[in-house]
Length: 280
Ligand code: PSU
Ligand code: MN
Image 1 (cartoon, helix red, strand yellow):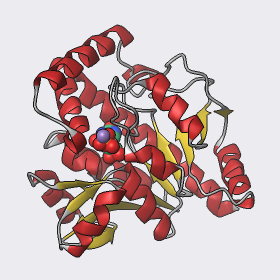
Image 2 (image 1 turned 180 degrees about the horizontal axis):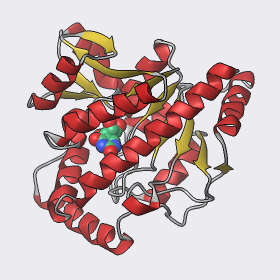
Image 3 (image 1 turned 180 degrees about the vertical axis):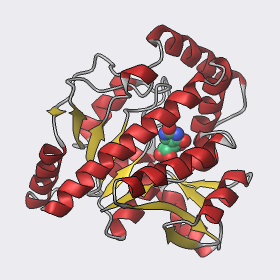
């Protein structure tokens, strides 16, 4: 059983040394479940599907690593650069390498009050990968992100719940289609393929209740972080890493702790889905 993992969460999503610890813990979970983890990145212009411990440590310590969405991949490869891969780039590379299940923390989406829409959403519409996440990141406009997923016809299911989770919280109040078991998820994926649909199966896996953050707190930190963003000269690809850093600062690290917990939870579900797919 194979499970793909992304690398932008290592370079831009979590601070050092939490990032190394988390990346290695996620790989450990896949191995414990009897599977093989494949963390994906571009090292010196070469697509690497599966990293060594040394590769992960080097990526985690490095500063100024390029964050590659799918559109940045071609130039990174052509120029021999090192880049971490976001959800969009990882989904594409995992699929190309025959690994149909990929676990991440949160997907990108629509930022509030701007035209900043993540490449993740468009890539999910055209790559047949199963992507397990805990919802769109809380810093996003969740209703707009949910609408975009519908407009792009991205098949999405929420695991054992009837609403889209909101990353640090189990619920968002936004209704979602439900799936109750890895078997059901695998069956939906097979039906997508039989229909010849091009896109992903996005699986929303709510954060375990014991790691959930208070919704009011998250709202407050999000407002503060978005206000910081307005005041700072940050735009484009730097926006999401900047906001995650501000959330960690405003919450005194609480968001980092929850982020790790939800990543681990997503990897566990991804393993169950991958095992089910292999069973056929
Ligand atoms: N979720 C996390 N931490 C992260 C990200 C997601 O918990 O660092 C990364 C993912 O790689 C995602 C990317 O694809 O942020 C989205 O960036 P943007 O909004 O610029 O598309
Ligand atoms: Mn963006």
